Image 1 (cartoon, rainbow, N blue to C red):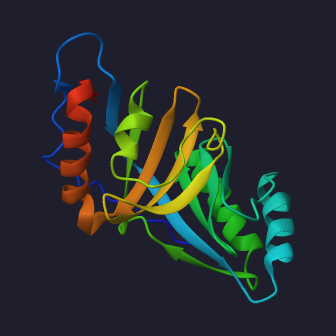
Image 2 (tube, rainbow, N blue to C red):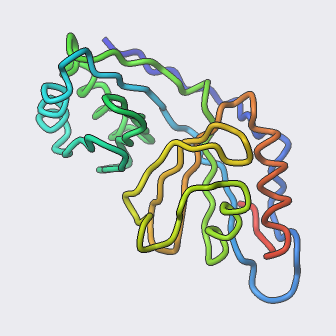
Length: 201
């Protein structure tokens, strides 16, 4: 039985100061917020089991598992392809957590599932200058013709290992970084966003 334990402690505790920051002229270029209350689990398919895992995922959730980099979601539950045969499951709220538990049962014997809820922190970066800000520290091609809603990648951002996925066309991105690098990542992100003006929620 999958055990899900969520903790109130935030790796960004004391760092996020709500309000307007950086350049003051005009509307803020982006909005920054922490995604809290998430359950994060890494799913790794057993050898030769990727097709079986995909079938089990569809049976349990109704989602078509991305077999490469990409993101699918339903009811605040998402599966993000991060590497061959590996995915990050992100769940928020009771409905999504119930779906995660159901999926874990369906994957028994097909995949390993490792709790990363305490090991990763997730920030949301949204707004018209979100792309420009991220490109200051990321070599990934984020042009809207290439990287769209549903797009995902694992890449260094500001020299910190990061899993990034695009949520919508605004654009809005979620970025998962190791909790031990949360302070360093926040320092880089706010310095990079300052010229555009940004709000923190």
